[in-house]
Length: 463
Image (cartoon, rainbow, N blue to C red; front, side, top):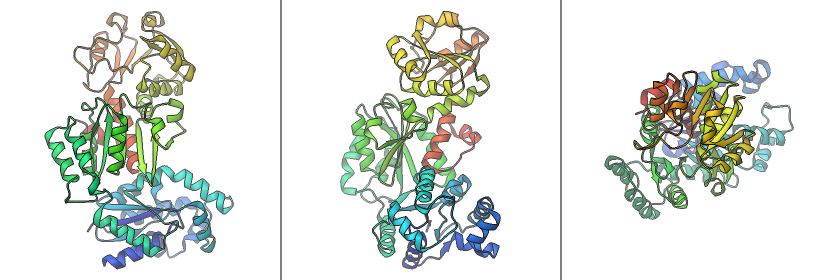
């Protein structure tokens, strides 16, 4: 049997629930905090007070790396989810439950079980601050969530066992979902896999689904990459295409399947914002576009990782004069990245008013595509879809390209677009859309699962 791992903040009941689950299933139970105390011969409070949290986390990392690989119920410390190395070990061939409770319940429980403070704040303020800081980590850690606010450990343990035996998909609601995927453009082998997962008697009811949402999106490399990563890291997931002209329909199906998350592409990056519960304030709210949605513990939260995929390949061009071609959803992430790199940015679009609206939002210059010739930029970033089809025209005339330019085409299918070909002929430095895809996918996988995939691994696996 796969390992069963319980994560969550202090006071959510991981140890009590874990012991009960292990007892009912006839499995051994391990608590990582107890293992740390056995390993060091000291109590957790003593380690914190005498050596500090950093030393505690180092020992915790060693303990987690040495845990049994199967047939065990494991309760973890509240901060274990913040370390990608821990998540790589804990998630492999395991089912991870995140236990959560409201702040009042956690405060009441912790007031009865003193533990070393993590900050210098009063208990309630500390709980709120640490919970917010770890929010991304807990949502990434969760295969499934159990709310222990108003349940006894016995009830919570029963809920865990029910999920293990039956999964969370309602089999009575799956027929419309099957019809959705049958009507799409899934390759036959992918359709067969989805039909098996959504069957009345699936081989594994715990397999969860993610996918790319767009129209069109059949060109996306996401399914091949993510499914290869699932196999590499021992994750019980399947990634597919959610292709439909109606975003409402995509979200309806995702909800019915209890999907873990969605990668969002053209044309839904802006449209999805009012349809989800929260948008990450650090980037997605400022960009005004979402390319990643995580469904976890009853909340749909949106992020933007596109800007990271644009920023990283251009770090050494910081402060350059840049032209951004296009003013759609992909352009917003690119503009955010270029401004973050302190570039002198001009947004050009065939509909200048769209360029103006985006430029005013980010504090950039703007103009018509015809203005390109007078700017003579150091960096050119194409965020338009031109280049996805063989018959597409170039987003900018070839004769306007010069050897001292760096040309970055965000289109990654095909990997070498007509713009990249033209730029290479002119002697420009070129960056293909594959670089953006790698950067944003790496961050997206971290948001989905808390695992920090090496860039070299993604390069190895991308089709």
